[in-house]
Image (cartoon, rainbow, N blue to C red; front, side, top):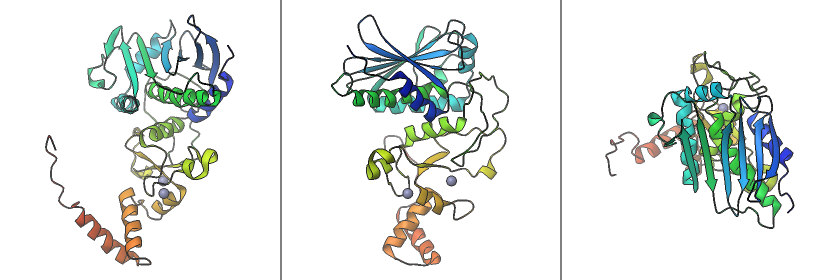
Length: 317
Ligand SMILES: [Zn+2]
Ligand SMILES: [Zn+2]
């Protein structure tokens, strides 16, 4: 049977997205199913990890396997901050909502991947597994297979990388997320890593790649060339961030199109998503209105939405 995957290409795509240099290999398991193995190029397999993506019959299985001398890595993953563990479970939740199953085994015990509060504190062994079916895999179309492998491989990789204290290379470019110091913590060195990349990918996996203000999606507007194109805006002004502040890509970052992004930064501090939405609505209602009029309309809009008297949420509502 002919191989359906180009391991070097897939490794290259994911390396670009995450800023981690990954190596790709492929092979076939005892059952004859093709698999793809990805590992960080600059971390030795025995003290690092591999991700094995196995192409089943219309299904895909992704496994995290660590080396036999990876005790430091696993311990460091267990020592991830609560924010990092929270991001991991947000990503897992998203995968579950999209029809995947996820298994987490810590120190040999089945553990709920979305309940970080229940995880043991000291980790010695870790196994992670994501399964997704049905998927357009092992069909007649190798392009579809590759798309599915990259899509789910990326989703699995994001979960894992959020638990790994990777070294920052401090080269912040492209977005307004700057490389921030993370304070003292165990660092496992994986070269040429940029936390920006992981934060961006994590944000997009959680929030999607449509603009939060005007809902434009470049993929649906421009097809292949627009796919995944979007700016990422930091909702907490960088000036208000302390040295030890750790960006939470789920709560601090949002996807916005270049137009809306530029409009947000027309003011310092920037306009919020809701403020811009209100302005857009008032422009539709009162075209050409002045800023003051827009403000009045915006306040009326808020009042109408009851935003000035938000009742406390009660259970069961
Ligand atoms: Zn927009
Ligand atoms: Zn911005």
